[in-house]
Length: 385
Ligand code: SIN
View (tube, rainbow, N blue to C red):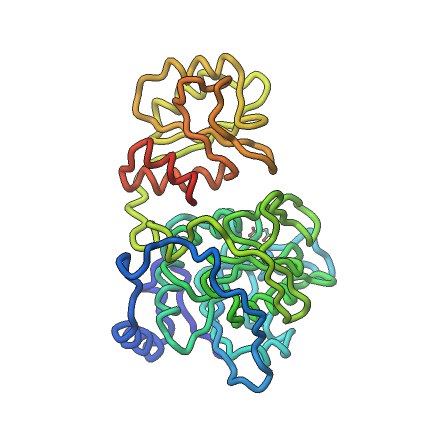
C-alpha cells in the first residue's frame, strides 16, 4: 500500500500526489486515448457483456486508487461508541491497517483529497474529484478507483459524479454509519468490498457504483433512508445493481440511464453558474416563499407530495408566474415518480423529474441550465439521465 500525500484542496493542481507520481500520471495521459464524443454514440450498452468472469487467484495483482474525502468511515470518537464522534478525523491508511487482507485484492494507492463531514462537500469538490479520478483512470496500471465519502450527502456526490465523470473504469464510492473507533465498525468491510469491486471486470462501464452493507447500488439511484442503522441505503423500485459476499461480486442489473461516458456532461459539466433551490411542499406551504424563489433563482425544484403535487395556492403561483425560472416538479417520496400532471399542472409549466429525488433533480437541472438548454431539452434530460 502506498500513500500519496496531497493537500486538502479541491483542485487537482494542488492535489497532485508526490511530484514523481504526478509526472508519471501526466505523461501517461498524453499517450492514452481519451474518449471523444465522436468515439461513442453515448448510448448505454444495455446488452453489453454479462460475463460471470471472476478474477483468477493467480492473475497479476491489480492496482486500485483510494481517494479519501472524510465522513464517518474516517471518523473517531470514544472507543466502542457509535454516536459521539467527529467525521473525517482518521486517515484511510489507519483503516487499511485494520484489514491487512485487503492487500491481497489489489495494490493500493491512497489519495487524501479532503477530510470533511460530507455536509461540507461542495460541487467544487465534485469537480476536483472529476479531475483527479479522470487523471487516475488514464493510468493504465490503475484498474479502478474507490472514493470514501460521508453517507449524509453520498447520494448527491454519487449522482453528480455519475453525470460528469468521463471514465469507463470502475468508480466505487463507499462510506460507513459507524466511526472507525466504534464496536463492529462497518467501514472496514465496506472499504474491503469496494476495493474488490473496483478491481472486478464487471464493474467497468457501470457508472458510479456505491457499496454499503454487502449491496452494490447505482450512484444514480440510492437514497439514504436511515440515520442510525448500518443498512442505511435503499434504491426502491430500480433495485440494487448487485450484491457482495466478502470479496465476491454478484451483479444482477446494468444501469439503463445515461452515465459517465454516455453523459453529455462528462466532456463538459459547464460553468455551474446557475442558482437552483428546492421548495418543500407541506400542509400550508407558504406561496409567498415560492413566489420569492421563482423571482430569485434560475431554477426551482418543487419537492411535492405524492406524485409531485401541491395545494391550489401553490398551483396559482406557478400558473401566474411569467418569468424565466425553470420549475421542476419532483416527489418528496422515496418510491414512485412525478409525471406530467393534467390535474396539478394542466398547462405543462413544470418539468416532471420522474423518479429522481428533489436533491438529485436539482443537480440535473443545474447542469442543464449551465449549458443554457431550453425547457424542452431539460425535459428530455429527465427522460434520459
Ligand atoms: C458525513 O456524512 O460525513 C457524516 C455522516 C456519515 O458519514 O455517516
